[in-house]
Length: 496
Image (cartoon, rainbow, N blue to C red; front, top):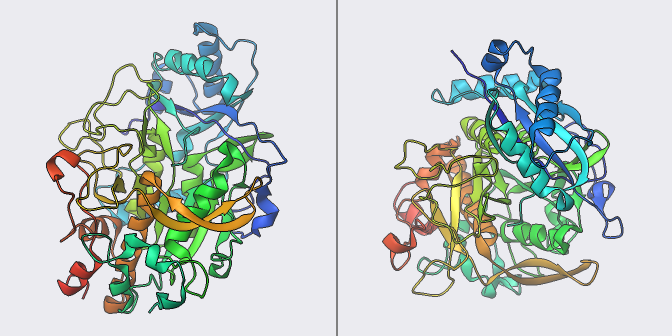
């Protein structure tokens, strides 16, 4: 019997404009929230109904059941929210139920061992309080809900932290060491000498909070905002983070600045911030579904988000169940997902105590019976100098697929009190390593497409980029996987 579980997740959100349909493009300026418009994220939880449990408890399921569950938790919680009103909505509002069903059915055909998720059982419960004033109360509410028969797990959904080319006329290219030959970088210039090595005929969507899409070295890349909001001011770093990420991959091959790893690829962005029920919220699973709906087999998603566990340590965003479900759908559809391992200095082989969970679980340890594989390429960060070792803040473990530079990554950026001055600055952490890997993956995909006339699915591509890669100086201690070597893949005949 297919069992549906109730899962809850904090969804701490911000934003200011309602989403249009997923495929409708809008100009970046129409969805940009400026620093002058202060955005206070609101809190929410996402609830997944266990229909089997709902039947046994004589609940009809749906919005009314979720409302009753939350009211019961308000009543029973030690730090109750009895006086706080809330509204309940479907978790995914931007992609139609019919379209989601089609995507899930296609995923089961493309990937026979994919375990389908019934996204219609997910709901979001929206509260009016800002997240910064509300965390402990919501955590207590989740702990109470997790004890109910209808509840299988409770965890955060939002509130994460941001984590044939001629480069000779790009003045900063000599400082982009992460592209250099193996031993140092991924050997991108060598790949540029082969059809598709610049990412031609590939598409990637970056999912995070904000970007300066008109940066002087990105404007001609024609990167479009497909869904969500382009929010500038949260943590005073949205534009710096998002612009740096795009720069590593997509800086234009011209006579200014640097050059991206895959300047021939088409890039888009999807914002995690959206408006539901009158308030600004973040919704990571919905952002991923928006991206899935806009992409096809062989395309890619870069998830530039990390989230905390119950102890405040940073982990990959897929520890959130709803996000795991969304990533699994993407990879089962042949869409590659690149995911930073997070900057928490944590061994991912160890059990993780997620917010709302009563006991730790080894969900990222491949040797554990609790392990679950989303199919994403998980990326950690290493030093830029030789001998290469793990950078202090990077998470590590057997689940890590590959690593790249996690420091001294020169890329596009912004400066000034309003983040309105185009510049180029070093970037770091697993947030900086992940775009390097995304670039390497789509360089490979572009060459495969040019050579074979087809593309690789997410699982095959994940395995391929690890072949003949460069390890760190002490692999058994660092536990970072290898750094891809594009030349080794080409010369080894793996892409022909």
